[in-house]
Amino acid sequence: MTTKKFAKYMEKQCKGINNFSLESLFGEYIVLVSGKRVGVLYQEKFYVLYAPTFKKPENVLPGFKTINLFDWSYYQFIEIDNLEDKDKLEKIINYIYHELYFLKEVVLDIAFLFQSYRGYPETIYKLYEEHLTFLNFAYEKNLIKENPFDREGRIIRLLYKNLDLTEEGRKVLRELYDKWLAYTDKNDTDSLKRARNIKQLEKYYQKLMDDFDKRAAEGKSRMEKG
Image (cartoon, rainbow, N blue to C red; front, side):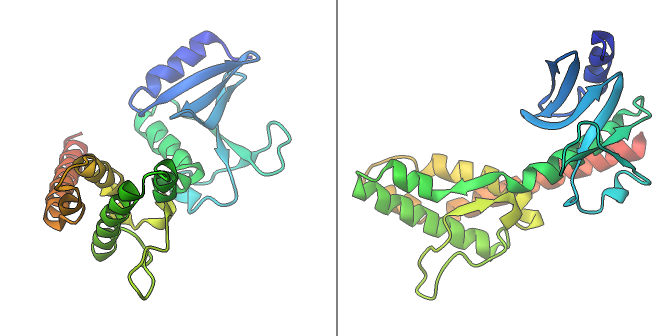
């Protein structure tokens, strides 16, 4: 059994992790990030999930050893000690979330949009044009790994996960896509003009990249000072 005191302590240690939470279950606690299970608090100890597909776990968890707490056939656990080190905890938990879920998260689901507006052919046409512009831009900027078009320039890929993005794409593509959809989400005489406005897309992209570089520089500066 894990006490509420230990659970509160872990919440305090992990408060810097986005969307971190604990869920009580049969006297123990499930550790969640953005509602996804990344580990457990079990008998006053902290364990993170581990799967054989993890890439370079030794870089984050040097000398790690796995344990099968619940007789699961695929997932095992790694006990995390030195819980006083908040930076280490954040690095480990973010790594586990990334390996288990981030790469599989859907970023673009164009087919869903087409299905939602299947009874409105004019809207479908506009959606196709704005995604044609967006995907062409994303591929030219090396934000997605593979060419999304056939030889005739038609879209052949309608679903994209983080796994399909480059490292640069994972930094900005989701936010860029949200801004693009907000910009093009208006039905008027200029709808198609907006759907093909690469210059506006370029402005959003440059702003996002500048903001990302600024945050990265600030983070590096804080680390050097700390």
